[in-house]
Image 1 (cartoon, rainbow, N blue to C red):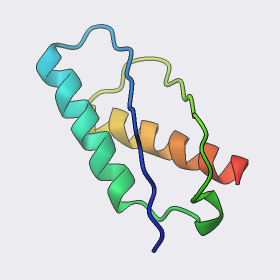
Image 2 (image 1 turned 90 degrees about the vertical axis):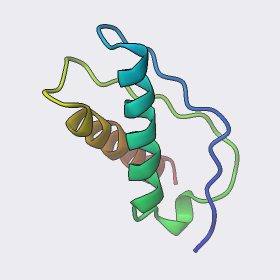
Image 3 (image 1 turned 180 degrees about the vertical axis):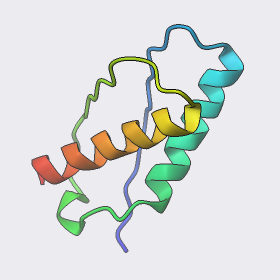
Length: 78
């Protein structure tokens, strides 16, 4: 499998503690690591932005929403 490199993951969060923000970032990284990324999305240099409106019931659910949105954007831009 080809490699995807994430140089920067920036989160703008409200209503979460620093510890919750760190946990959310870790969950997102783990989700992207485990994801089936389309080969056509690998390569090139681009920035992606996703917005997840509202507050999910858990950090796990929120991270799953972010990962799904990132994958959707990767497929769309491939």
